[in-house]
Picture 1 (cartoon, one colour):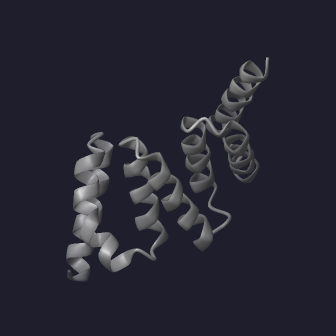
Picture 2: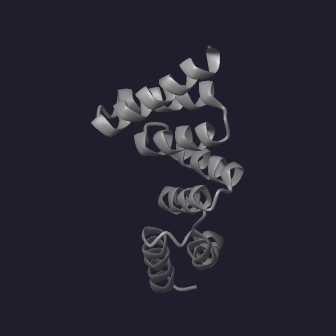
Length: 125
């Protein structure tokens, strides 16, 4: 695949994901992953496609790869936390979301942290 073809496929996968068509996005991403799997942006998009298609273990692995490349990627930490939350791994999820909210004090991140804290409180009662 040419560099231009890789970029085109990546952009198409982004479009498909924005349209909530994660399985199609994964199909389009396959050749991109074959040639650019070491790119954090590719792993992040791959993780999001897995997340939205409920392939949570695969999503987790992709987000962890992003964090291997850049431990300060707050968004990767947030979506990793959401992935862990969907797997019922609430304590691990809270740790990741808390880190994300500390790195990037955005109201949406604070809301995610409040949500996970509420889930934990309900489950510990």
